[in-house]
Length: 466
Image 1 (tube, rainbow, N blue to C red):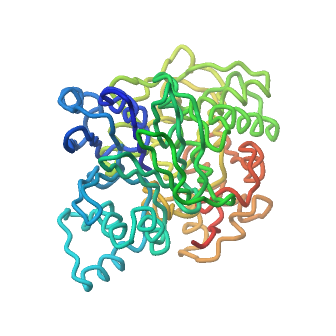
Image 2: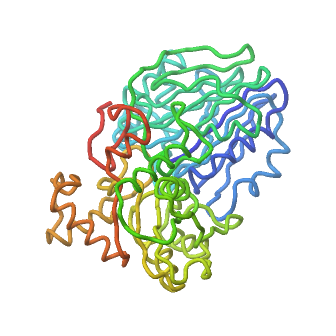
């Protein structure tokens, strides 16, 4: 996923933009970027795959002067882009994933369009979105036109000389929320970016809603829909604990997930632990419901290492996973440990860099409790799981069936024999004492939204058609 942040202020906004964008660093590890408009547009983009956002931009932001700005933590494309158009110059950032990039690009090329932002991965999808927007009669209608043509998801911030257009993905798969402070406005993916900067939540954008934030305040340009399919994985893993989506706290959802795991469990253990950081909330909930003590056999070396899930290459993911978790042998040795994790995606990092450390430090038993069901499908709407072959559940199915199969409904059903066989295969592959996944019904209940308002594609393969 990616995270975006914008600010409209009565004074120079560069410092708020720097820190507001930085509070999205958990959403991606490839590129960071900021653009500010004062007397002119000033933009900066850096590769942040091997360093922290603040360290790259700490000198840049001091040169940025203006009252309007947008920033991004990007999981793939360099951004923001600055575009010259019939509407004047604008800067643009996006969060999401477009499936039909090649089809749309080919069509625009046939129509005579040219693209300047080329890389080894092909067309920059942010430039593609910008080109589609400029085909509309107005900027809001151009944004609406994007949602008519793309397959996938895109939330957009577009910075003009007069203010910022904000547009939430048409089915609301990614969030977008507005904050206000003494007449200044911020718009962001993550509400955690507001808290220390003094903004209070003013409005969660509806799916497909387009707003304009200018010097005179907030204007609605296109109403949104009340039905949506927001990504459930935001609460389970991707979102920051201090954030909320649709008014629902990430931390409290994780605690409720942990409580549900404990309610459905009967294993005897000495302590409950969470894989830092995103497994911690789930483990706290498990400890509350079970009465077992919450302890920390593994601690994360936060200053140097971010999430091991988000880097684009397996080599970097493995390096981060190796180095970031430090075991505490005195807590581990001789104990039966319930280990709560947000999810099991590939399973390789959990096996090789987490569970291995527990066994090496003398754990007596290791019982793994993921807070969501087995992941069956790679995400269609954000860069998270990259291919179906990577998924631990699919590896298990392939081993059990002797081949890849398309119809996996029996393996999704937690009451079926095939589901039990799949989980047992994964348990053996991980090398743990027991493995029990969260039921999808309990996960949905923990979030607290109706099932039809959640995107559950990566677990069920079902999604709403745009």
